[in-house]
Length: 510
Ligand SMILES: NC(=O)C1=CN([C@@H]2O[C@H](COP(=O)(O)OP(=O)(O)OC[C@H]3O[C@@H](n4cnc5c(N)ncnc54)[C@H](OP(=O)(O)O)[C@@H]3O)[C@@H](O)[C@H]2O)[C@@H](O)CC1
Ligand SMILES: [K+]
Image (spheres, rainbow, N blue to C red):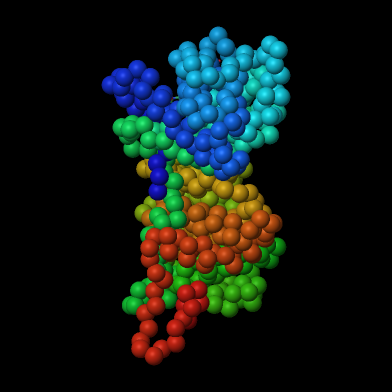
């Protein structure tokens, strides 16, 4: 798990450190980190460093200063460095002097007697020092044309210019980097919105900042693996948590089949289905105990309700019956629309039973509007507000999945690809959340671990080509195994002497 700090948190910590550090020491520490990563990239892409052409795009603040000082260190390694000064009148004076001293070339943009775009397109590596933490809005002036002329890999200093530092939003022209070198701690731009896609690989240079509790946290494989419920020698199919799925209809049986399938694949307990698609579920997943109604389903430790349910009276009655059961519940898709349409359903909820809501943007707006919660560019604030307002965990889907608890904790799962933007993908996610709730997981972590496995299973299934939601079901066990192994745990093999071994991924139902 790693932390993510807001720009304000980072600035406060930097200011405190600046006050007790010799003048210019911090910027040189940051720049030395940039130069180290630039040299590694050059070596990797061109096989060497001496004589390679690096172009620095230099803006008006300390971000440009970092780039200029990095140019100074690169000159020390005989790299041919040209700095394009986008605001020559405001370029960082000490950085500029250092680069010139070391034999670097500086060109004012618009360039006199030099074609700035040709310099950019002829570079082996471009360093983006246009703007950093003080950025607002997209690229301006000469910057968009220069960025469009880039043919080489880009190393972004702190963040790719044109991307909003606190939300990862991209509203116009912005840099697309291969590597982003950041300082002190990761910021929201590195994990939220379109940020991750623009940052490329994020590398952290330690500045020795004294940081407070992070605003956001990101789960990694080992965090998921440490928490994943694995059956012990005394477990049977009931003790591991029974997941109930109330989803699907005669019009949308597929939602039920997918949600059941993901619950079956995610845990080794038991899955019960209640609804109008019992025949379809039984024929695809014989291990699921399928009945026609929630009341007939038998005991479960958590419910999933909503996918493919419809938003009419019949769906309303299903959601009411689920809430009456008083167990942790994941409400998804039509379930969320039903809550928006029939707000009195909230009264049926047992306030002590956790609810996880998993909206996409339109469902969020539908549910949030009457509650006075708007979905603006700050998705973290929006998810937090809805979680607090509904006393629930909110998993807001998007480029980065934001999971907010009513107590203010937020976990983010940055998307690494868009393969999961496929029909039925949400039904798979909801089954995962349900199975983790049934296993007794803390609802915030149930939602976040489910999201991690969902994304990883999607990546494994896609392997560079389009996939269907059903394909993702197939790779859930591999994603779980990866997490469990990353945590240094071995899947259990409790068997008496001489008994036949189970495969690690063989279902343990029955
Ligand atoms: N603090 C520290 O200890 C350390 C800081 N470090 C480094 O400092 C960086 C922050 O530097 P910073 O605060 O000087 O501002 P920076 O981001 O360079 O912006 C400069 C000016 O650009 C302008 N501008 C705004 N939007 C724009 C846009 N879209 N396109 C073009 N221009 C735009 C805006 O001026 P305006 O146009 O509003 O007059 C703004 O004031 C940080 O990211 C890190 O790299 C490291 O060295 C470690 C130690
Ligand atoms: K930058």
